[in-house]
Image (cartoon, rainbow, N blue to C red):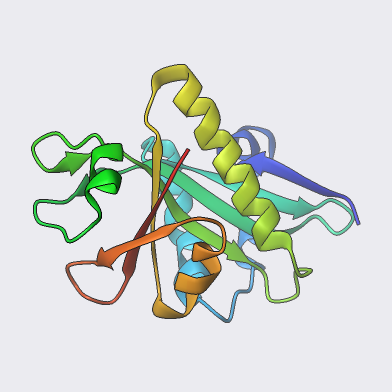
Length: 175
């Protein structure tokens, strides 16, 4: 199996629209239907509006998407926090707001090989690291469900708090 990662906007410029749409429609992630919906119905619009960049991991043998990660910028507001003061200082807060990269989506197909999520996460962090070298920002944030706190924690992400809706957990890592 030959895997390669492509930026979605590259494929938008090199593939026929119907072919790309078909490939995206075939992506199945039963663990997270929101991830399927994002890839199929939102990612293209976000690319066109420069809201985010989606990186697709494709099995070239089958021309099939096995996973994807969506990267963006999104501030983290922390007016009141019970975090360790050293962590808060690392965030470079300005009037209660920290600049951050956002790992907005990380999803793998139902039949993707184990370890693909780690590979995609490593690649996403490399992209963020390049951004840090070019124009700064040392913090990456993500929002995840309760069952993923331990998974992201094993990579060094720190749990900050529940989001305002209380359905997702906000986590950060410093580069």
